[in-house]
Amino acid sequence: MRNVLQIIGLLVVLGAVLMAAGCTGSSGPTTEPPEGNGDGTTTLTDGFGRNVTVPTPLESAVCSGSGCLRYLVYLRGEDLVVGVDDIEKRDQAIEGRPYALVHGIRFRTLPLIGEYRGKDDAEKIIGLGPQVIFKTGSTGTVYGTSAAEADKLQNKTGIPVIAFPYGSLRNGAEKADMFGGLRVMGRAIGSTERAEDVIDYIESTLADLEKRTGDIPESGRKSAYVGGVSSAGAHGIISTEPAYPPFLWVHAENVAAGMGADHADIAKEALVDWDPDYLFVDIATLQMEGEGAIGELKNDPALGSLSAVKEGRVYGVLPYNFYNINYESVLADAYFVGKILYPDRFADVDPVEKADEIYAFFVGEPVFGRLNGQYGDRGFQQIPV
Image (cartoon, rainbow, N blue to C red; front, side, top):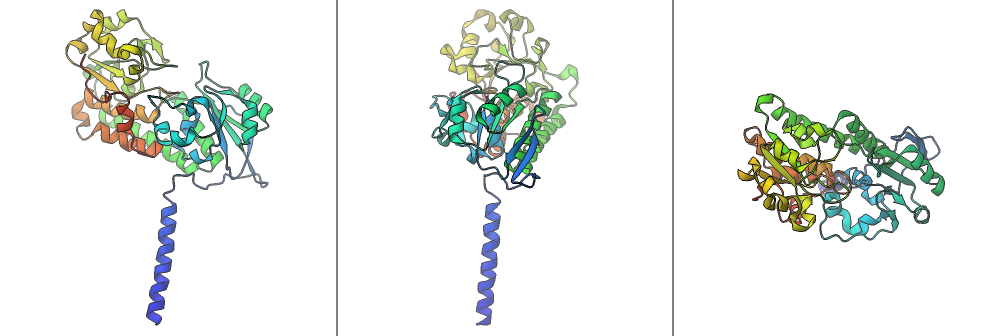
């Protein structure tokens, strides 16, 4: 009998251990209450230097502005969301946001907080009563945000507003904005560890790309151009990113680099003069009539004279922008671009498998096939023109 009781006791202990282990795999935010004020609140400094006091632990939130909800998903805080802006409620024929492919069904059922791009309806937000409003936008654009806008929304609603620039991975200053936003959002929801994991994942990915390509001499770098990049909607071949991160990270020569750091529309004649070794087309262009940039390459005689068109060096990459930058897609694109330009340096990489690894980390599921399928599977493929 004693042996039987001992076995039962061991089984009970083992079951408890397994249950605890299962809990660590939860997709929800980790319970890491920030250092508080001793009264059930904590005070944070947001991306504009504003001191904001929020309840601890946080149980509900809304996200205002392009890309804000993407960050909350990265931090596994999507279950905190109690309302969304109108872009999240659209049943779109083409959905270019990986986070929405995974969580969109639930988001579409949530109440409305206002129009997209940060056009908030204060009364609707008050009616939902979230404990915090996260607000972000792209600095230097009409869709940006500021300390003044955050204060205005906070005064209207009586709800704490944590605001920060969306940032980017194009340069050190904008990367600091992005990482700062992730950190303050993570601290507010009790997911500081996850925020650091996301930042570390990005940094280690960039380090891997640098290790693979950093020693390529300037004389050995391939010239490239990316067209069809979305900016507040789909665009054609002249729409580009002069500081396109995948080119920066694999040390390609971006022929449009002289156009600055921000999104740009170039002259078609300039592209013909540049005549890059490789053309990459952002497949978000396919939302336009006539296949957008791809149709232009097929039908415009001047573009048809490009060496990359004549010699079959035109390739599709996943959407860079869709309600702000899809960082997980940008990282995945870098491996595909690297594989095309420098195949010997990426011989061990399957870009599709790498993309799904990245998607699973950021948004919880490997969605490359679902995303690419919406664009006729043109991503990570040679495009015949």
